[in-house]
Image (cartoon, rainbow, N blue to C red):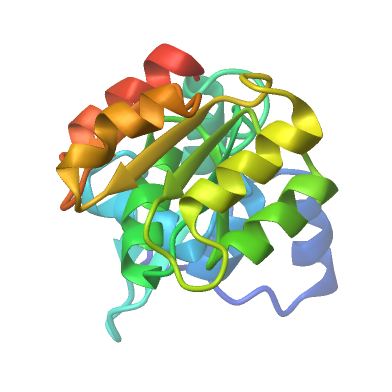
Length: 201
């Protein structure tokens, strides 16, 4: 077959055929939108072989619509990012990204918040199934956010897993009503396993 025949959807009929679900090529952005995930998540899925990607001579990724449809079928009904909603609250953007990508690979939907105030605001918009909460944050720290979550929603109604570089606060997290604790730097597998035990995807 010709390399990337029909990559550019210039013809309006091509657009209509694409909308009807016929096989054609999508860019990274289009494919991510089609699957309902972030572009960084789709890149990761391609890197680990979950979604086939083809590369143009310029090094850009292209995705075949049929491959995306097959991926959605393998991932169960609906889109893969529509699993249980996990709210990740941490002031380190790299930590949030790593956690988000790994949870999305497991089928969770993930929302990020850079601090306690953002986390509380996100909570009011949509209650998550689980909160992953850093202890050490400026202004509203993890303890204060945990207290406010419990105040508004009741102790244990939204499970919370705390994480911190201070390993000695694990018992305090349990005393304050958190469902779990993970030390930093993360053992990501431990974090994922705790998440799965509390809220299966």
